[in-house]
Image (tube, rainbow, N blue to C red):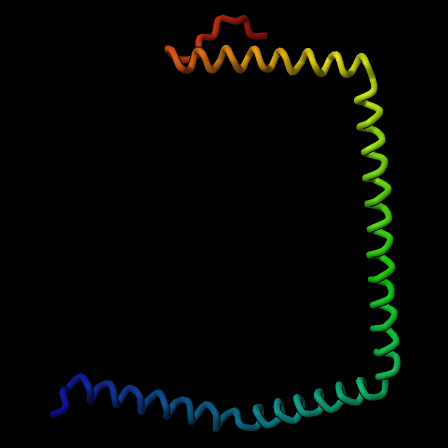
Length: 132
């Protein structure tokens, strides 16, 4: 036994289908023109591709070579930068003044971290400093 609700649903579905059918019928010429235009566009695109296949292939090959050369150039630049960085690092490590300053800074950091850890383990951090 069908309920009233199922009848309403069926009627709504039929109305929607009728409206879609009327819409398609009313716009069938436009859909036909759209189909013809799409077909023409595809044919023209195929024609362009076929007529320019050699140029397209040449462009793709040149692009591939350009990418390979760019990759090689980037790798060379990277190597130069790495060598320069290593040389600068070695130069910095051989600088006696810089080495002493770095050592002093590391000692200060070690003392500060030791003090902070000790305070954290006890009653929390105690700040007794004048801030700018």
